[in-house]
Length: 118
Image 1 (cartoon, one colour):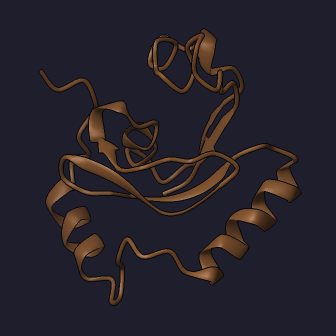
Image 2: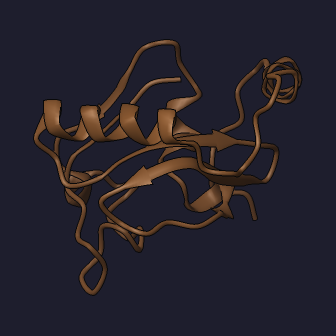
């Protein structure tokens, strides 16, 4: 059962993702620098750049916490791509979409704040 929303323009969005030249899972210093600068600017422990494909989400860069590829239905980013506006969630544990997420729930890193842009 799908537990995430699908954008009305999903086919075009996926074509755009796959049309980005050189977009591979190999980590590159430039993206790590962007994530580290974002982490410092926002004074947060984790920053990442993720790529949302049809059924999965993977990370071009992550700083602050080890993350690997995951099913699309377990990512916050599936909700971020639904709008051109940033998605800001001040407390993930109080948002019904994310309260039981492994990154939010007790026993995980207990993430609280999320901000994402598409």
